[in-house]
Image (cartoon, rainbow, N blue to C red):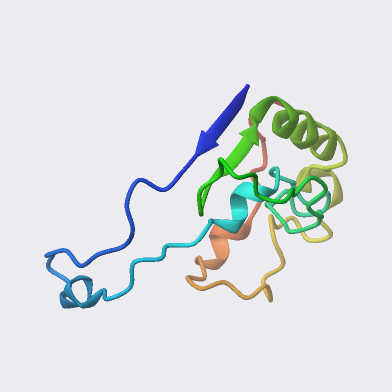
Length: 124
């Protein structure tokens, strides 16, 4: 199915508990770059990764407005399924029984036990 996303209104200040929201002075919100690519699971980690290139970005038509994005979710799902086929379970390939390497930088690093794979994984 094809879907169109367009900007309804630009950015503006608004009152919240955070004083920074009242300091928004710009109006242009741009286009969210994630919408130009289908979800691609990394074959090694399973995480969403930027392993793809945009193959169908077209010049704007006279009827297009700044910020318009068209998405074909059927094609997106097809690409996702193709990439998912290449992924491998950490249960099969982990060298140390962890979901991810302990050295992997994370903004909010979990406790070490959270990295451990379950002894009896769901679905096996």
